[in-house]
Structure formats: C-alpha cells, structure tokens
Image (cartoon, rainbow, N blue to C red; front, side, top):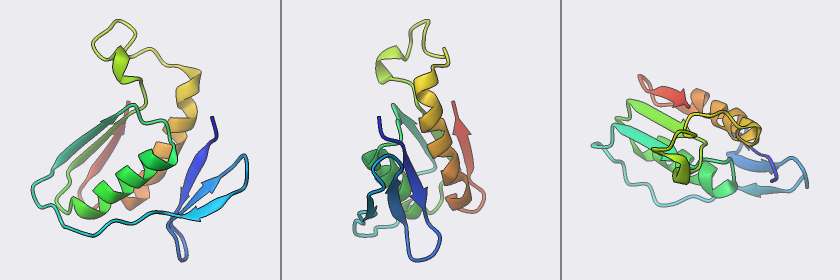
Amino acid sequence: MVAVSLDVDGEGPWLLWDKSRRVRELRKVMKYPNEHLKEVEITGFVGRAIDIELTVYLLESAIKLEKLVINPRSPALVGTPWEFVRVEENEGAIECAKQFKKNLPIGAELFIL
C-alpha cells in the first residue's frame, strides 16, 4: 500500500504519494452545500486518494457537520469479535485521517476509531 498524505497549505489541496513522489491536484466536484448532514462515519478508510477526496468533499459541503468518524477497519469486520482489534496495517490510515482535524468546520469533532 502506498501512503497518501493531504497537503492543504499554499495552493492545494494536493495529494502527495510518499512512495513514488507523484503529485496530482485533488479532484474537485461542484459545490452544493449540504445543510442537513450533521454526522458522517466512513468505515474502511485506508488513506487512498478516493478516501481523501470523499472526505474533503464532505468537509467542504457539509456546512453544519458536527461529527466525523473515521473507521479504518474493514467493513467486513463490523459486528464481529475482531471489529476493534488494532491492526498495524491501519496505522497509516490513522495518520492520514489525523490530518483532517485542521480542516474541520467550526464546532465539528473528529473521531478516529
């Protein structure tokens, strides 16, 4: 797995691939503010470009977001005894998810399981 980090400083946001040193501009979608979305849980977040792009979109469009929960565990484990077992493979996803803290809307909280 290639670690992906989010850089929103300067002219970004940009996706930076640590392993290959490739950089590409973060894909943008049309902005439609969502005033009703208050809580979001993303299960299966591994830190890939698509995970980051979806999360950035939600942070930008959910203008009344109160709570963002990022769960790096596989959706197949939800509801099983292994759901909350910490796996080393999740550490990169957790580090990637921590970067969203500085992009949260005012009053929103980030929870990483």
